[in-house]
Length: 295
Image (cartoon, rainbow, N blue to C red; front, side, top):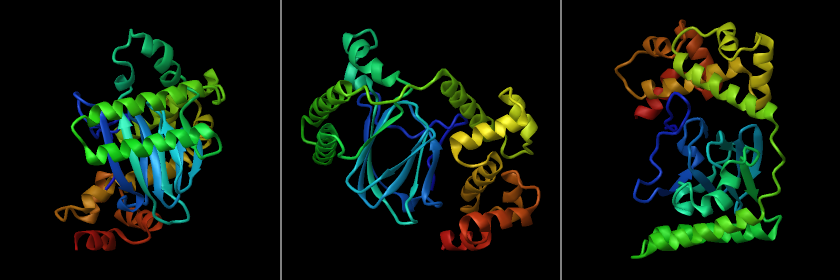
């Protein structure tokens, strides 16, 4: 499986509901076919606790090595992906919540004074909570308390969760001075990366040219390639191939489609080339992958 996103790579999964926009998810990287979840974003805060193993968690262009027992604060609307470390599985618990649970409504003093300085701080995409500071330990303990409350779900569990989130946010607010400032240059480039990802998602089934993508973000071809490689740590060409292969997995799970049809569905005009790229990325042919996952 993979995380379902829309054309802007926004995750489509519901993180709770309108009455209580809060969700605890128990995850492991091995449940994703590639051993990693695709780049995506969502408007909620995400707290990740590593239960077992390690993970390379990349936020925007910053790879972070999360060790067992550590946690991560992920700010709203940050691009993120996670992958196995040394190809070993990783179990983790994810807590996502709408920051409205903290501030109530946007004109409140709580929002203006305590929440906005964090959620609107584009330099603060994430914080690795690695016990290097005492307050890291305090936040991790609160995260564990929230998870326990969510498991037990006693009569007043929503209030108990809100209380812990308020405590956690107070700690974040008091230590919101460690992130290096994001320059207008970087912010503009992140917007360009979003635009490239959106364009690829809208057009991956068709022939894609570097000239078209570069024109879409108003850069020359060479600068477009350099920009993408700098922030995504992979070449644009490699990303498109990987993206097409990931998109083909859902079709492979349906036996009604032939390999030739699937190759065409995801932008490969040559099924032999599709099979070659698939084997390089996944370690087996599309046919073998299908048999393994349909059996």
